Image (cartoon, rainbow, N blue to C red; front, side, top):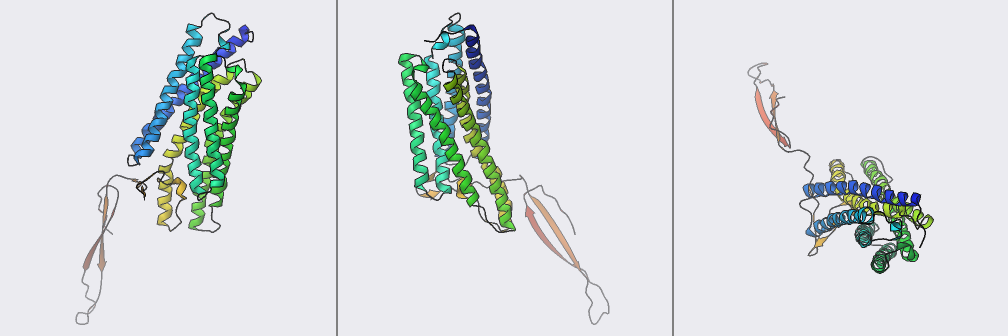
Length: 339
């Protein structure tokens, strides 16, 4: 057991507090995105709603475990100079909850890549296996902590879990970007507008994948550099939140992408790749249709009166007025305009 200095003690406990505060703030964003999802996608399949609900529930439990761990370190262990040599059961449970959130998100994005690659098992099956190995190493770590209570005695399990998570993030992000680029058309006109949306999707995929990858990589670096300090654990507190936010942000982004798709469809462009539609789960062999985008709330009625002047043979240059009324509706308030 390593000797804990006063400086290391302050660094370790400070990292736990800062990590818990950051994780709690990110948990608030998770909750907000969950509320937005149920408001915007009330017609989603029940399976998709259960996945979103499970992510939110795991996030709430994870936050509760973080503050339980902080209580044990800062209050129950007050005055114990060797307190940071131990990892309490609540921290072990938080590691297991992080693994559960991570594997759900990894499977979700792996499924997206599977659909975008048109059923490429050669790429997606190894990713699914890595995701299972990652969650297995995390549960091994959490289980051993229940009996040992010291995290730095499990270097292989902890290192393996962080390495697998980082590698899988890179693989999924790279795969999605590659196949999105392949979906781009080489034509002009409406296809060029579709390419603009695909470029936005590519940038969005890189940004969301990069956040989780960087957070995991930094935690791995501190674990390898200072295994007896708890900086890596404070960083690990926020990893679960990054994955939950990445998942919910990707799901909620469908509304904006569909709104852009509607404008492209009216101009005759191609359809979006199936990875960004609402058919994540099928029911009885029938695909769930995407939600329609309701950009406005009421109707607009425009009445157009046309006046035609004509001359007859028996009445030279006599003008008779004839009026026709055409009407068109569009989703806004009732308004009449005469032309």
